[in-house]
Amino acid sequence: MVGITHLVYVDDLMLFARADEPSIKVLANCLEVFGNEAGLRANSLKSHMYMAGIDDRMKNRLLQLIGFQERTFLCQYLRIPLAAEKLWITNYGSLFDTITRMINSWPNHTLSYVGRLELVKTVLQGVECYWLSMLPIPSVVTAKIKVICRTFVWLSKHPPIPWVTMCLSRHDGGYGLRDLHA
Image (cartoon, rainbow, N blue to C red; front, side, top):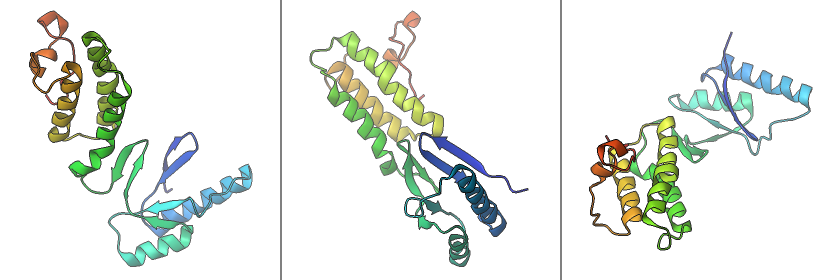
């Protein structure tokens, strides 16, 4: 039997299948059975098919079977870029935007040093860990995030304490930040 893998989040549903006719027929049949039972139908204007590594003739045949439009496989899901190939540094723009937007929403000049440090530790590094749970982050990207966080904590590009020291445990004289670059 052909297996269908899925990912569900609130009102989004992603179905993953092999790029062959039997798999797409099973997928189309499952969508039809679901529609008959639940009274819900996939909107062909909002539903898309992402394919990678198959020739144009097969793509056209599969699109015909399912009735969806093709989209290129570089999209975002829950702000994480999804792609069929290795991501470029520019694909991490939404990570930088998220971190920068958070920092800009905080009144950094009225926050204490400890407050800024705690926001970096819990929120900003939490966002970075969320991304790391999904895909590897290149060292160039983690280095740029480190600079953003360090600048936010010290309100300066020239910190009095090296980041490596700040990432040591409190027991070892550091501040307990995570060095995700290491």
